[in-house]
Length: 88
Image (cartoon, rainbow, N blue to C red; front, side, top):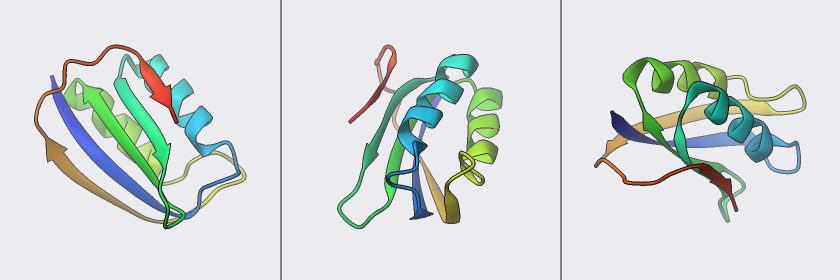
């Protein structure tokens, strides 16, 4: 079990990116959150198995159909005791 913070840049607000990320995370058994950032990006904090996080990371490179992802950064973060996946 580990946690990663992804920051997604591009046209990712107003295109159901957070809700779609939540669907993917729930499907993969990942907890965390997806929140809009003031700079137009989306922060995704994801906690789960390495395989699930890798799969989510690959999906974040594309996002939902209406999104245009230009860049995704990823950094490991300390384990989080969080349940469920929220959007804010």
